[in-house]
Image 1: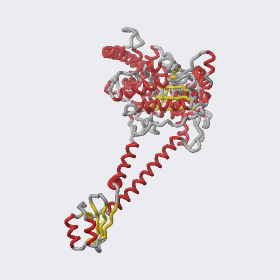
Image 2 (image 1 turned 180 degrees about the vertical axis):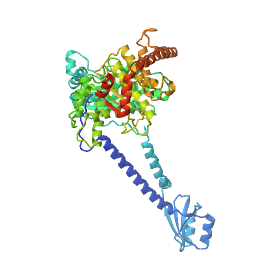
Image 3 (image 1 turned 135 degrees about the vertical axis):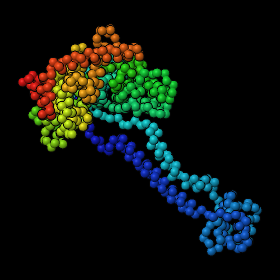
Image 4 (image 1 turned 90 degrees about the vertical axis):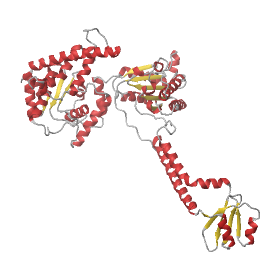
Length: 590
């Protein structure tokens, strides 16, 4: 919902970077040790004696070729050397009495040694040590093989001043922050301290920012984890990680534990008995037990974030666990202006950028979306070597975000017939938007985009409309169908002359029609999606009927307003792009 201040880098680095350095150091030492052992093992194996039979040894003794013997006490073999030969030979120990005396009588140097069994075993295993070390390091690097470690707590410098809009929720969160700092405030009134807060909302609406702001406002330790981090292929590891996280939070209370994507471990239990089902159940049970274990003096607050609260297990969201549940909607016009001004700090804008007007033109944007919009506009200004960010660059950034692509500088290899089809298609959208809705057309272009779109009609509602009527939804569908209707009339009302460029329009219209069917009373006000397959078939029949009716009405509208569509289309074929003032003037025939 707002801008999160940049955290200053702490001296010495973060715990994660320190841990990475220690891991690299251990790996380097292990590799160096493996190389050293390999060298030693190579030297040892290089001096391995040549084996000869005992009979051959006796013949060498008889021929006076043996000079000295090295005899290990209790060993199964012994070594010897011949005269004028540095090579070492090995043969079997005869284990007979008087062997030493018989060798000494023949003037053979006889040396007895005592090598323990353990030394012999270690020497025999020495060549395999490097391989074992490499296998151990690889296993430790595999996902899920290492122990889960709770990093040192963070101390966010974000406060509620950095959160724009939602003043009612901020007031409630400030009260929770005060009781976290001073539990006696609740005890004086006999109230229970809030154990958990559940934040629900679409991605980018400020759930994480709210959690950091609460921790920053109180100055307590902040532990952040994604619920998916707890799930592993080995049963029991996830539950152990949950217990370790909350144990760390208790030991460093007062603290805030923030769990993002809570539905990853908090979904409804389905009774599954396979490995994955048991792991999910154990994680959920560990989380329930951890929250239940809090007392008024623990000083730990759990904040969960999800955009699928309907999937959460009832035992998790009951009162006494997540006592407070807040839905964070997309920011309204006033909140969007505050967010834009927060993210505008440090950026230079041209005089034509009016944040109040920009807030009105960004209906439906989340807080994160607004931040990304200004950042993309700044990158465009950097690319084009301008010293300030202009409104045109902000509009282009908005198109890039909506279409996931850039508007090209020319129509490329498009022939005149294709140019005509695209122009009438966009003209149909523009005229239907002005005639059937209260939306404002900001720009119409037939320049293709890198995302594959043939043209763009940018329109925005004049204000946030929370309760669209049945008529509003029907007009929205007609506006989406109007591009194809204009092509249909251009082709002489022949389906074979219509292009495939309305695919995305039809997809969006289908979604609106599905919602529209539940608001009409033709066959009862029912949500057919709750009736299984029969309900789905009924819903499809209803949607088809509504779609056919709205398509026929759109074609009739296009015929009635064909002069306006024709004027806008011909202007697009000449200029490629039209401003809001030009489109409005052409629609009115001025």
